[in-house]
Image (cartoon, rainbow, N blue to C red; front, side, top):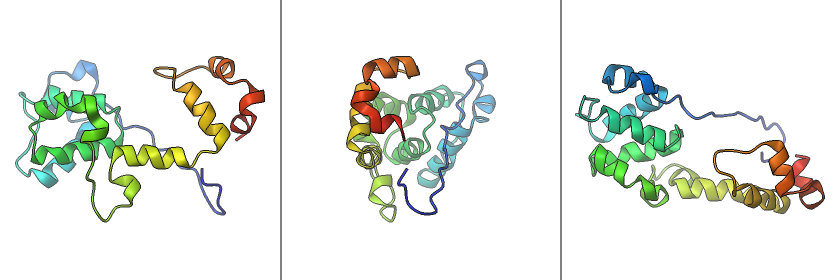
Length: 162
C-alpha cells in the first residue's frame, strides 16, 4: 500500500487456470479466465491464432507456468507475434528476460515483469524488505508460525504491524 489519502486496497487475484480434468479438450481449456485472456491478447498480435487440439495443452501450460498473473499472461501472449506457443513455453524458464516490452504508453512498471516486481519491492519499508528477503526462502507459501521463526517480531516489528 502507498498509504496515501483516499487509497483503497484492491486485491487482484491470479486468474482462474484450466482445470486439469479439462485437458486435453480445447473447448474446456478455453473456459478458464487465464486462457481467455491469453487468447484475447494473442489475437491482438496474431489475428489468426486460435486454440486447437495441437496447441491447447501448450497454452494451458503457459498460463499455469505464469501462475495466472494477468500482466505476465499479456506480455507472453504478445510474444506470439514472433514465437509459436511451444517455443514460448520453452523460454519461460527465463520469464523475467522474455516478458518485456509492454505498451510504450503504459507506466514503466507495467512494461516488464521485472519492472513490476522492482517497483513493488521499492514501495516496501526497510523492515518489510528484510522480512520479504527472509520469506523468499520458502517455496509455495508459508505459515505465520514459520514466518515468525524466520523473522522474530523484535527484528521485523514494523513489517509485522502494517
